[in-house]
Length: 481
Ligand code: GLN
Image (cartoon, rainbow, N blue to C red):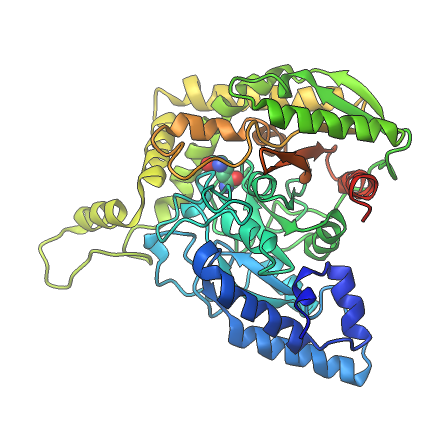
């Protein structure tokens, strides 16, 4: 069998499946063989669902045999972040707290992909409860960056990005609360997309910070991201914050597009000059293809990290209260032991949660406590509104905003673990889109010192189509795809 099977895009694989160049079983088996060969080193997956994958592939082959019309994602092998539930399979969220937890239902995104007969290969590694930017906060093991295995793949969806970059899956799902899809995509040289808040259902995603969380695709091309997004999007009765996409004005490509370039995103402390140069070259390419670059200002970006590290921990502290060692999750309770209820809570949570998760629960509980609520939480919400207004104002004059995805390329293991603040600064360019609820996508725009650089495209609410149009054309002019 030709190993090229694992390098195909969704559309190419789909076409070859329906013309019977190979079967869905062959496509799946080739991915499984590649995972078995490479994942001992990369460690993108925490568990596999190979038996189910082969069974689904056989069902797809049966439909091909009968001449049925296939959905675009039928028979396409995918990897799923381990905080998204697949019924009957382990879902750990990268935590000891949920090491033995088996999901009792499918997340809505899984249900939607199942309708298209996507083949699920397994669950991918992540920072514990999606808190982190390197996958080093996984309770199990770190994942390596396939481009350079001495470096982190980013996080928290590091396993998903590494799986796609190393051809262990055609696409993956991740979740993004402050950059967790876009930052690992950028570090691993693949495409990652966070939809408009509410465009995709969060039902069956383990909540981190509910006003920021969104599920989205990680792929090897913008066109693939678009196909997966279309499969995921839509209102879901199980998630009251999900909505039917509003129809908004969109652009069809680079010619005549007004691209906003915010000065605050090119000049922060710790900005890598190679990253900046790659993104500036990308802007020139877009200009050559007919776009107009417009200098803009998003003055409240400088407050984004402070605001995020108040609102996010506040939501984390309430969302994670359910893991108490009694209802479910890791428990120190022993029948006949001396522990009273409060001891069980305290010990289960102290042993079940890692350091970063505990840090955020404490921070969140503090900012929500009486006397501090007004000083911190309320003020942070007000500044969040200001950040949103910055974007509203900018989008009066531009169609898309283009920025670097991250201030640096992939860093080495251990480089930032001792200084949480330097790790938090990784997300300075991605967090504003979460705070404002805007759609944003990261796509590769060159290399610096042998490491991939990501270009971030941000559009107005529900204008995902503009991002896809610009992203696809950029890929076409620069890579000829
Ligand atoms: N890295 C950010 C954090 O640690 C974002 C995480 C995410 O998007 N889930 O909070």
